[in-house]
Structures are given as structure tokens and as C-alpha cells.
Length: 311
Image (tube, rainbow, N blue to C red; front, side, top):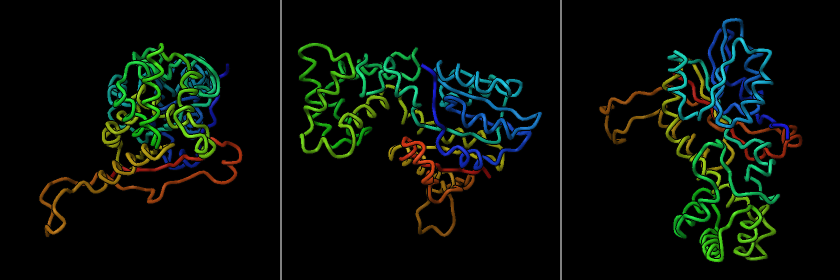
């Protein structure tokens, strides 16, 4: 199966980076290389792009896609949360822009053997980095009912989370839940029939929640944003595309706190906490796809782009 991924908000994201021909840019979620390719097309002879991804299939696809620019591209297998170490290893102290596309690629969703999809039967896996130790099967079979409930409620925003967790625990008493189809049938049984027709596939939220848990997605995002802003040169930008409200809330909050970090009580006449602003939020409202993109790529529907500029 060919690694395919339509880059969401492609031009908007790369435009937001305000690429300088001689600048250094990081694509922290390289994927198939769509955003990276457009950045490379805007770089001059001294410009440089660092691509980071934890998925070997993505790295192979991006390496091929960017081969014309291989003299200015360095691709590293890692998670973007390790960006500071990745850049340090390359003897880079500061960069002019960083972008993240937090969406799961079409390839990952559609390749049954990766275990992300509820549309085909496959072993429960969901690891973006196939060398990772935690799999979806372990979450489903080893987490307590309460832990499952919290994962599905918090990461999937699923209102039937308690019942789904109860059904999973009941089903695994008969034997391990090992495939995506087994899990889908359990989820369907836990949701009232009249509610299944609304809001898309009944497994969508639970599968999202388990994927986020397996890959520690929200923790990685929460712990990375401040450090990425610190790595930017003055005027450098951090551009992040999110796909659900939990991610977007984290980005919005971290950007706001970096713009206005003061923790003094509002009635203090002057700031005494000593915390100074690192820059400004460029996008007061997130950038969302236009109608043409939505018609071309239905997976762009929930995407939002937020941008922060270093002072």
C-alpha cells in the first residue's frame, strides 16, 4: 500500500511560516512530506529543512518525495516532543519556523495492519511508532474498567464511555479482545441503537481515545509547545494544525499563556512576577479550510490552524 496523505491547510500553513530563503525550518510531523515540500520550494541555497517523524513508512515516503531537495533536507526518526535533542544533535540552536500537523495520515487510517481503522478487521495496534511498547490491545485488555472509562471519556469525549468500558471488561472475561472488529461489536452493543445513527460511526470516538492513549498524543503536545517557542528566532513562527477540541484547547491555552504569562492578581498596579511575554498569537481565531478544500478532502473538516510568533 502506498503512503498517501493529503496535507490539510497546506498553503495556509506554509504561508503562515513566512519562509525566508536562507532560514531553517522544522516539520515536526513530516508524514508524507506535503508541507515540507512546499517549504523546500521556497528555500534558497542556504535554506534548510529538518523533518521529524516516528513512523518508518512516513519517513520512506517523505524521503522519496523530497529527494529533489535532499541537499537541504535532514530527516530524523523521532517524536516531535524530542525536538530540542534532535536539533542539538544537528548542532542547531535556533530555527525560523516549526509546523505540526497533528492529524493521522490516510495511510495509517486505511492500512488495516496498522490497527487504526474500525472499517476493516485487523489486530488492535494503533502505534504510530511500531517500535513502541504500548498497543491498543494492551489498553483494551489490561486497563481497569475505571481507567478505560477515563480514557474514553477524556480523550474521546464519548458520552457512553462508562457503558463502553463496562462492556469491554465483560467481553474480555470470555477471552482477549484482539481485533478491531471485536472491539467495534462491543462498542455497538454498549450504545443504544437509536443513538448509533447520529454522529458518524459509533466506534469513532472510542478508537480516537485509544489511539491518543497509545501514542501519548496529548501529553506530547502539552509538554512540547513552550520548548518549541523557545527554539524560535525572533520573528520565527510555530504553526500547529489540530483535529479535535482537546488538541485545539491545549494549543490555544499554551499560546495564550506564552503571550501573556503574568500570574499577578488583576488588581496589582504593576507586574511583580517577572514573567515576560515570549511573543504574540497571530491567529485570534483559528484558520479553517475553505469550501473547495472540504469538497476535495473530507478529512479536513475538523482541522484548525493556530500560529504563534516569537518576539
